[in-house]
Image (cartoon, rainbow, N blue to C red; front, side, top):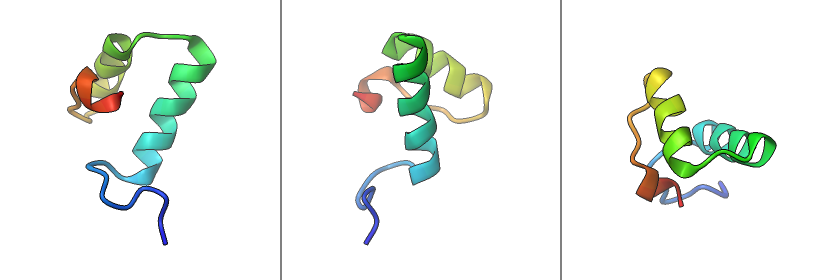
Length: 48
């Protein structure tokens, strides 16, 4: 069973977001912008 069952985004997207957040200490709004630049529309409130 997937750890990301019932989530809006694929597991790979979630893992990349977590990696960037932990590695670079960026804000959720920065992460929202980075994901948008890569073609993944996401709101910062859904990441948290």
